[in-house]
Length: 205
Ligand SMILES: *[C@@H]1O[C@H](CO)[C@@H](O)[C@H](O)[C@H]1NC(C)=O
Ligand SMILES: *[C@@H]1O[C@H](CO)[C@@H](O)[C@H](O)[C@H]1NC(C)=O
Ligand SMILES: *[C@@H]1O[C@H](CO)[C@@H](O)[C@H](O)[C@H]1NC(C)=O
Ligand SMILES: *[C@@H]1O[C@H](CO)[C@@H](O)[C@H](O)[C@H]1NC(C)=O
Ligand SMILES: *[C@@H]1O[C@H](CO)[C@@H](O)[C@H](O)[C@H]1NC(C)=O
Ligand SMILES: *[C@@H]1O[C@H](CO)[C@@H](O)[C@H](O)[C@H]1NC(C)=O
Ligand SMILES: *[C@@H]1O[C@H](CO)[C@@H](O)[C@H](O)[C@H]1NC(C)=O
Image (cartoon, rainbow, N blue to C red; front, side, top):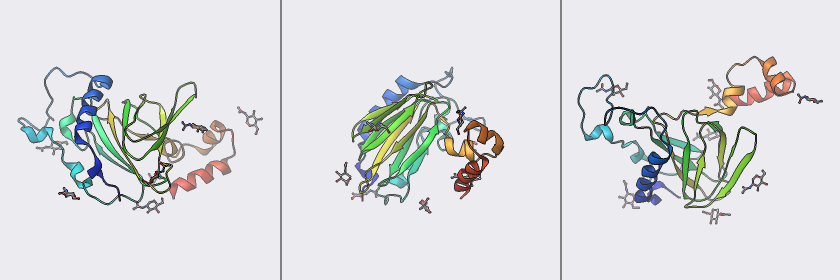
């Protein structure tokens, strides 16, 4: 089984350095770094996140899995305008349609291959087949997806974000799993409330 031990850590370091230069977008801070309000002093551990160690040599998950290192998990990112995530795609799995409202995403395929795409504000689809070693940029705030179409092989990617807190808004959940009045959904999608209810019930599981 594939695992994260195949990562090239040097490649990742370079990747994040580039990501920071290219896609920074959080407000600039006026100090070298920012400490949370409950903290007065810090040491090097504040700038270190070890949560990804659990992925090393771990068995591959059965379903698509994201492991994030964003402000929520890693307080040392406060004010630094970057974050990252490891994306694990078992054979045939999808990272469903979603948006990052506060950041551009720079995705690097470390293992396997991915079909990816985003839709711009004119509804034009930009889709691509990525191989191991390829990098793709998803512009900030646009609807996008990633799909491992290989039915036998897994894929692994690392994504860098130009915000310490990129945010993720699932299209399916924000539209069909957020208690928006069904009549409004039926009008919005030019369909019947029966169809809307069928979609909603699939998401409620
Ligand atoms: C300070 O607050 C942050 C975020 O609420 C929390 O993660 C951290 O553990 C706290 N640190 C201390 C020293 O209490
Ligand atoms: C991961 O597995 C390799 C051998 O396959 C081993 O050398 C290494 O120490 C392991 N790493 C961890 C963190 O368990
Ligand atoms: C994987 O997804 C399937 C189908 O959605 C679900 O039934 C199953 O519980 C999930 N497995 C894990 C380990 O989350
Ligand atoms: C892009 O999507 C179209 C329509 O779904 C598909 O026919 C085409 O093969 C895809 N192209 C790539 C490069 O994945
Ligand atoms: C699918 O994955 C398998 C196992 O990693 C690999 O041998 C094969 O070349 C992949 N197929 C394609 C079309 O990339
Ligand atoms: C809604 O669908 C009907 C057919 O079911 C079609 O005639 C009509 O043009 C559609 N309206 C819009 C706004 O797409
Ligand atoms: C839909 O929303 C419910 C309640 O918030 C949540 O438990 C469920 O996981 C959501 N469905 C999906 C597919 O995420």
